[in-house]
Image (cartoon, rainbow, N blue to C red; front, side, top):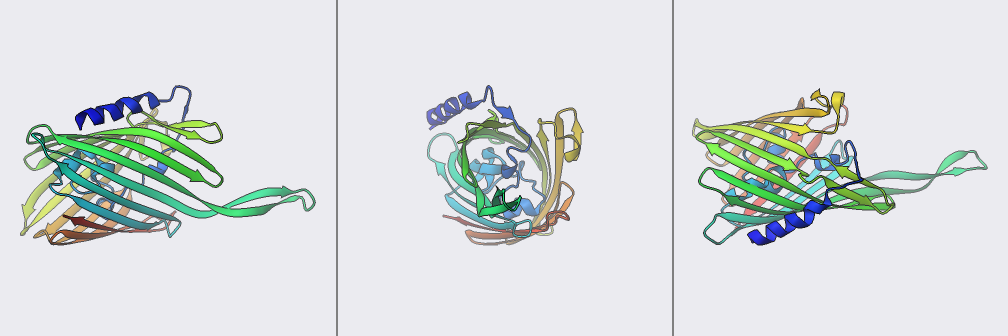
Length: 313
């Protein structure tokens, strides 16, 4: 299995673009996050990724799932402007090293794209047809423990974009790590570590520059339950400047803060701030089944609602 992972990384490392343009927001379709649980906590999950959304948030966290499982998510984002769906599967690997593999798929799509042409007689544009768009990202994840308190993981990912009559393919890789010490946890996820190339059928190319997600968490037992306080920061290197919460030169940072209280491993209450936008969520666990809901407020783009379901074998 390790040889297979190394081979995937070797194959994807040459995908670092030489002449491609590192475009701002080229990977924005991957920035919305997955799972109602982390999104209810303000998009903070890098340091505590311990469920079937770990392939997105931090591949190192996949090893914390001790059995097989499947997960699904559906979201109507920004006032039903976009449909956002997620499905994943993972299983542990037998062997001397505690390890796990997983596969997950994200789809983000919508309609309402009007293609126009110019009417020379009426001297104005007219609608030729109305079409849609969709982005598909397929993750292959491997994670392993390195001692009792340390784990690492990697993603190989394939991207397919369909925008009106044009399409693009992409290849990329993510690297993640988790460290736990007592009540504290630290995590990182270097998304698009190799710089992800997007090649369009028009012959044009652009690249998704790396994003470094850093997370910290504090966990403790209180009132017959578990309390978790989490903070994340997304560091980007594409010169976003004033569009980010903080910036210095070409480096920008967006911040996330969240909390979760779980009573007797049955019901969870969550609240957070996603780059200054209020989030909240609720979770219910019944034996091997778990369902989560979340709400995200946004003054400019309207509110978002997400529902996730997990089943562990």
